[in-house]
Length: 230
Ligand code: MN
Image (tube, rainbow, N blue to C red):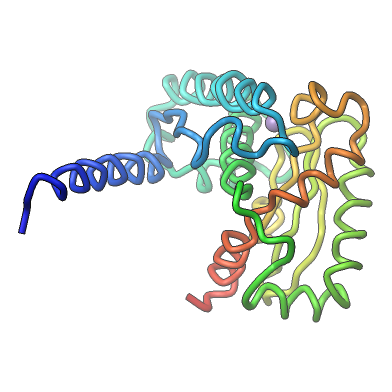
């Protein structure tokens, strides 16, 4: 029964549907989906100013530039973001691959963070981390070392192979593990714009803080989807 109180709830429901509609925005024209949390929600680990610039300026540029690239290529306009990335010749960086990767990598990064973070993985992902890294602590060390090892701009990733084995890889600039046949589970953006305003040149401090806001339930869902457990 619809009454005054549930009218508001219904309106909220419609708003959620509208946001979910945007989440399915994986084809041209691309729009900048709002963050799934407030800009200051990850404080004090990732600061509000960094989040505002990262989402509203950096990601927005990738979205605008990807739309410009696709405007001139009607044949590619029906492809999803993942299809656009996978279509790129292996390893080759082009304006199209850089911008498609920039949109994919940033959406994946922001959705992989949460203000309600658990300190450790949950579900099937816990078992897989224990199996493939001999426990969470060694996994954390290995991902930290990989993120520290990126020279210049790029990402460190937790990804699953076709057989569901976990591995840690790094990518340069806005490349993704998708073109290597891997299924991404988490990424840590180590471009300086991701941390410089708060952590200055101290990437290690940013990585420690990133671990405090990882959305492990989302990572577990991604892992399950990578291994077709869903
Ligand atoms: Mn970034």
